[in-house]
Structure formats: C-alpha cells, structure tokens
Length: 331
Image (cartoon, rainbow, N blue to C red; front, side, top):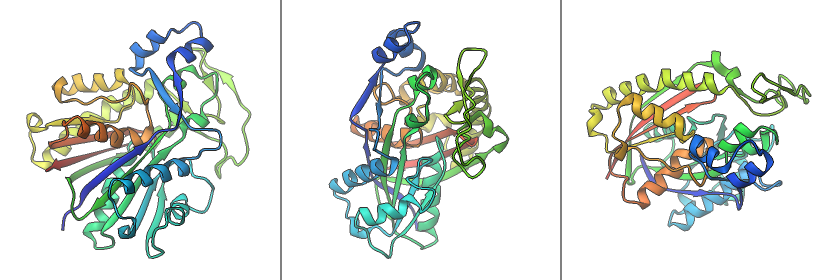
C-alpha cells in the first residue's frame, strides 16, 4: 500500500493589503523597500468575520469542484492554530458543513509552518495502517488577526489563506520518506501567549522593544533573528537526512519547495545548501507567508507552470519550534 496526493486546491480571502498601503501607514518604509526585503508586494487578509474554518471550507469546495467526490472522504485533518472555538474541533464542524459522511473521522492538529509536511505524514500513516483511504487534508490560518496594527514587520510578511489536498491510495504524487523534528525550547520565539489555558484573559502588556518593535502577549510575537538562526541550523541537516533516507542525490531533486517564509530567508537557505536556482520554486510575491498553506499553494502554481515533476522535496519550518521534510515522487 502506498499513499499519494491526488489533487490540491487553495483559497485566498478577497481583501488585499499592498505594500503601498503599508508604506502609507509607516512613511519610514517605502513599498520598494518592503518588496526588496521580504519578496512580497501584497498579501490577502481575512474579513473581520471570516475564520480559518470558513477559509478551509472554501478550499475544500474548490477541491470538490475539481472532480473530487466528497462522498469518498473518510477522514478530515485540519491544520490550524486559529480554530473557531476552544472546543469542539473545527474539523468536526467542517465534516458537517461540507456534507461528509458521519462515518468520517475528523480532527484538528495545532501546528504552523511545518504543518503541511506533518499532515502528509499523518495522512500517509492513516492510509498505510488501513484506517482510511481518502483523507481530506486542510490547512488554514488567520495570523493577520493576531498581529498588532503597529507591528509593521509581521504585517509585511504574513497573509491569510487555506488549502485542501486529497491524500489517497492513488494520485499524481507518491508520498515518500518523511523527516520531522521539534525543539520546544524555542517556543517563546514565535508565540501568542494569551487566550489559552495558561492565560485565559488578555495580558495587556504591550511595550516596545529596543528596535521599536511591538511586543505583547496578546499578539503574535516573532523574534526574527532567533527564528532565522534556528532555521539555518535545522534545515540543512533535515534536507541531508531526507535525501539519504530517500536514496536520492541532491542533483536528482527536480524541484525544491520550501516554506515561503520570506525571500531573504529561503534564498539564504538555497545558497547554504547550494541548490540550483532554476530548481528552487518561489511563490509568495502576491500571497505572502500563509503559514501552513505556503507549500500546497506553491505546489498548485508549480503544477500549473509544468514544473512539478520527478523528485520534489518539500521543507517546512517554524512555530513550535518544529520542522518537517517530505520527498514526493511525481508521476
């Protein structure tokens, strides 16, 4: 028994935030400066009443419109850190809203930028164990709702979006070897502290750091330097381990798709790993960093451009701190 990606679709909210709009709020930054620094010119922002569950629903409906039969779905996996409620699981809400069978399993898993790779690993395990045959893997995130309006750094990077993939016993991309890792000692480097069980209410602790950046437990906090160093430390060994496990030489990888964090970071990784620029796929300019959806969105676009073929290496890294890599073999 093998596990495959059969099809992928994605959804982006209607509202768009451009670099020009950001520059109008922060005159010390120009639209060109933002684009040159992070490689993003615009990003999509979820509507005030639009949740990650709403976006996952839209992505799933687009997948079904591409010819996927919803009646065959026997498990739903939703990767999100922006669930509708503390309980129940948003995947349960989607089972009903999407009109899926009540014999369908459904669960959320809370993960960020490595979430798609973890989801592929879980889905593969469900198929190989015989638990399920057709898994709807959803990723959806609304990080922009957790960013302070004055946090110009994170506002330039993150956008909202969702993806839907069917993982099945047949498809266009065989899910090969998987490598995952976690270092929870770095959790404080990318975190929202309030409104969980540890701090049920707002902390009301807003302050400015030495670089005039926003720091608050009530909003998304990212220590960019530490996250960058973490990424540089863990991604090369992960890639090398994945290549070794897969029995694939680096030169035999036909396409590399890394988490689309920002242009500077992933180009640094490309140079660090000595990856051919022509085989290194970027798709973030008009969507931004959509967290767990960056890689599936990039896969859709790479497939549309005819670049998704042969050995494709996926690599995600971020909140947790966590990382994950998957080798795909494309028919």
